[in-house]
Image (cartoon, rainbow, N blue to C red; front, side, top):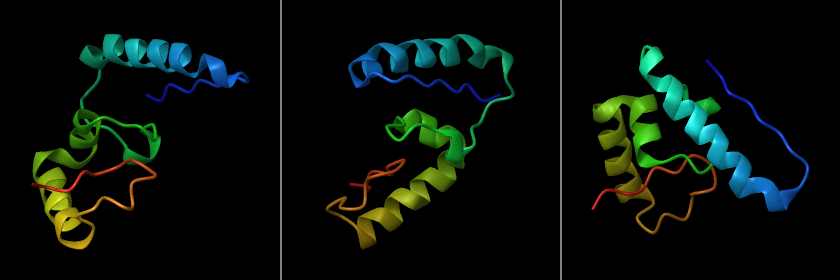
Length: 84
């Protein structure tokens, strides 16, 4: 399932992101679980990223990020925070 929402007024960002997240949370019990990382929002939460990569994959990515980008310079898209 993909929920896509668009709007024109930047001042409505918070309100619109909120209802999309609420709808996603309400529908989550009816899904199979998991996520497709390219469909996640740029400000995806750690829980959303874990769903996309799995707990093991997310942990491995965090270790790689800690080794190669400990200052978290590359954080524009779905950010994996460095471990530690």
